[in-house]
Image 1 (cartoon, rainbow, N blue to C red):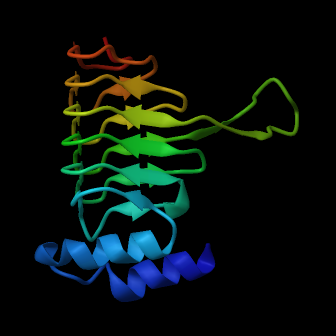
Image 2 (image 1 turned 45 degrees about the vertical axis):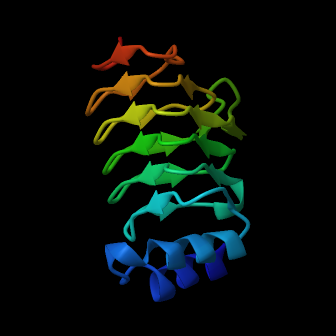
Length: 153
């Protein structure tokens, strides 16, 4: 993981937006599953690239954070806007040692996760759904739904 961190900083963070194919190549080298030509902003933060799947036309915005302890799948033409946080891990607060728990996140085709939204582990944002900016998503969002707020409703 240390090698990944240094590689992203040295080879990707400074690149201009149009060089996203280069960033995709680096992600692929580190095990990300990429189909088609998604866009990953140079300042996106990806914790563990080998747990990421990006489909054609997917977009990861400026400073979006993919905390990919578990798998994250971003579907075709789905957008994760700037400074959004997809968090696949939490702790078991019933156990004194607070062990780490992870669960996958899916953002299905055509879905939109607004700026600074926070998505909890184990959830699915359904196809074509919209999550409003700054929302905290505590339950899966059905396809085509529009949710906002804390918690998102």
